[in-house]
Image 1 (cartoon, rainbow, N blue to C red):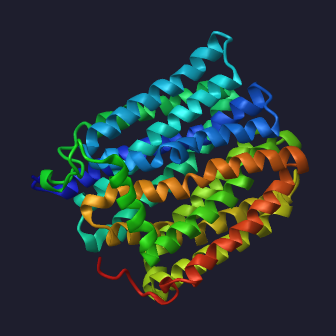
Image 2: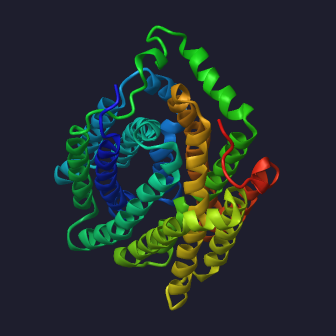
Length: 411
């Protein structure tokens, strides 16, 4: 039975997500700095770390959705938060004992990816139960806005902590944030659990349930286009992103604070984009807005690549990178709302996991390619290849009904 005031639970979920995202923004910079700065990882080894950060989405992304659909969502999210805190605390502990290795970092990164997979699938499946359908885009925009606010400050904090202390010590702040997120989630009365009659039977055929999610996503022309476009963007984007810190720290010798400026600027650009998303979608129509978002974002990221230098041009690169995120945020938010709107409630977990399997599963592949390209051709060449490939992501959208869609059709 749903709680009397479900949007109160949405606000608690929103607060928990905000706190954990703040810590994650610290880890975004601190974990690679441990590998590159403390353990002197090569470009390929740095790429392997990013691969490990997303590997769970490729290995267990599909069954995760079926498992989440079978259970209540709040315990899944609380357990994921507690496990992420424990994993991150192991890094400064190992550093203090002078026992930190790249293998340890890879293990932590993979464990974090498993926890993040289950947390995100449960959270996205919960949201449509806690908010009216006509308010989904606004709710996703609010979540994305606060994520970008925290991401604007998190990398700067990570840079300051790394400069003042060490990169492993900076990870302790993230661990505390996950503990606080688990505490906030424990106060939510109900997080989107499907009614008992809508839940798959716990002894049902897992393979059949996974297949149902796959057929739904790839049999729907709009969901298929959104998923393909996102996968191309993530694959190519991670090729460059996996080598960005290698270029900034290893090749250009920039300080942690300047490296943090890139991620802070991205978050500020994303914040501006999240605030503009609803107006842009209303003015252009959802389909046209998403097409324009992907094309413009990719163009701006491509223009930024040659400006990453250790002089005044660095400011130009950071500005273009930020504007790319401003443009891309319309696609990110609107596509998520489209998926949630089009999917029946009993399939939300499997739909989300199927999309994540394809979209996030492309990221470890991109990171592995980025590491290999960085080792072979250099970090900047990997950035060029990744940014050029980003432009291809608009093609599935242009070849689908989305190119002229004003708003989601009824599911």
